[in-house]
Length: 128
Image 1 (cartoon, rainbow, N blue to C red):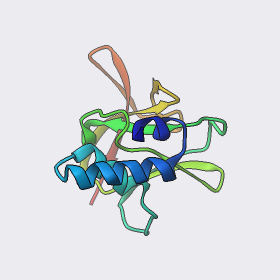
Image 2: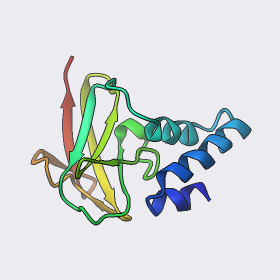
Image 3: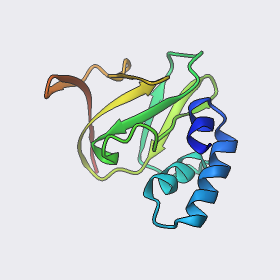
Image 4: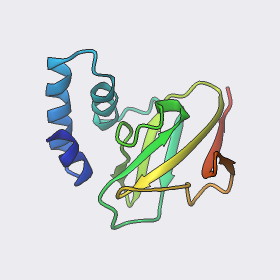
């Protein structure tokens, strides 16, 4: 049920179900990541992904080298007319994609891309 609510944009209910899953299995890294991402935000986190396009999307998530390309563990939250995903990343170079309503796509707001095994991925560099 948790993933269904996440995929339909019902983040509050998804967070509730993922929290329950985490209570039942404290080693569930995916549930832990999603609960953390859906929690009310503090200004912490050194990297923010923002997407101003796709105002009618129901679910936008982030997948990349930093989360094992998991398509559901890092959902964006709709804030002030844009999609936002903030997380802490170590300095380094990362390849990633956005998943918009189930469709994998390079970040339309980031011109930095690379081809990796035939796939076009967005690239970002986190500095200290």
